[in-house]
Length: 131
Image 1: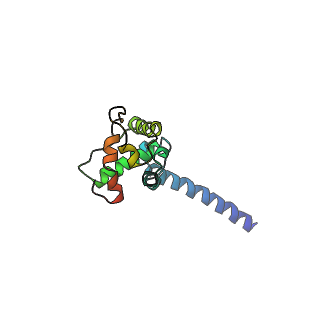
Image 2: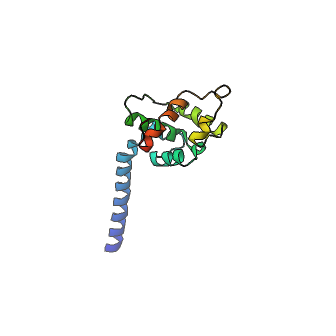
Image 3: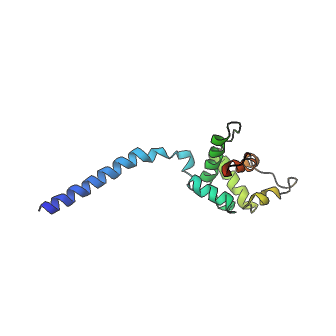
């Protein structure tokens, strides 16, 4: 009977602890960067520098822009959900997986969405470059 009580008590403690930690740490992820496919800054930079930009989620695009803002105070690049979604659509529609793909676009025929050019101009900040 003691083992049964201990098991029930331990299980109850796990549920309480899980619920408490979920309430404490769940809000630490801003909704703005967790409502359109999710991701992390690590998955985002892996895609950016790994030639997989068409795989970026809108949340990852926002995280990259936020990171660029943090690394360079002179850059003001805060993207809302719609802007991030437009950039993701632009990357996919034009098959842009790398910096070269973006630079090879014909500006006379392809118009990047708001924020896309500034994002590409500052990607080097993520890799320790100077922008």
